[in-house]
Amino acid sequence: MKRLILSMFAAVCMFGFTACGNTDNSSFAPADTTAKNEAAQQASQAEESDVSSETANQPEEDKAVSEKAEEQPQNTDNDDSKTADSIVVYFSATGTTKGVAEKIASTVGADIFELIPAEPYSDADLDWHDDKSRTTIEMNDPDVRPAIANDTVDLEGYTTVYIGYPIWWGDAPRMMSTFVEAHSFEGKTVIPFCTSGSSPIGRSSENLASQAGSGSWLVGGRLEASISESEIQDWINGMN
Image 1 (cartoon, rainbow, N blue to C red):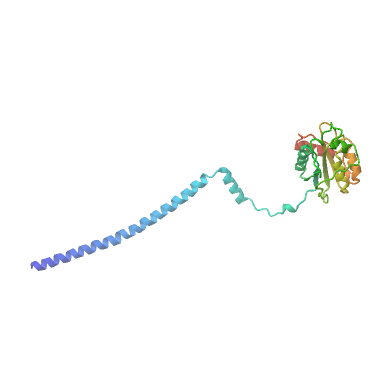
Image 2 (image 1 turned 30 degrees about the vertical axis):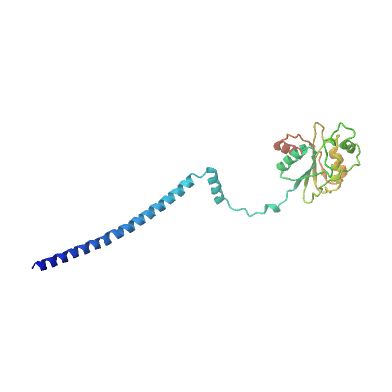
């Protein structure tokens, strides 16, 4: 009898251990999976939050550029194939005429070309107080034609040509005579302009027109180095 009771007790214990083992497997396994899913979801939300925070902290200028790049359509026009109908051709010994020429080109949307002397002018050459300086000798001889180092400009296709130069001894530098005599201005409107300390454009434009022998030459005028683009536009409008 005692042996029977012990056997029954052992059987009951074994059943209890088996039930406990099944409970661990069925209850905690799904709980572990759920925890992993929740952790992954939280990590994803944290990543999205970091991205949003980074965008929020992006500089306004950078965001504006990005938005503009997304909204603005691409330009497929080939602007390089377009040519202006006017050009500014100039010679500048000290940089004053250069500055005015650049303002004219900017104002009217013209191309621009600087004439470079084959033999650059030194400060001694420009000394008008010296009777033996290079410029004094050149300007005293109307037949002198100083060479141009880069006269490769093609005026074909331009309807208006602005020609700029400093005033030397009341006239345009002889190098400008070299230029106008080497080109045709047929069918073009030519607008000369000059810079100087105080001397007006005088007969320099008429002399160049005569040497060119073609084109419709306007009188032009003397322009201050400090002239503004709005004043240039008024000057141009006044010639029309």
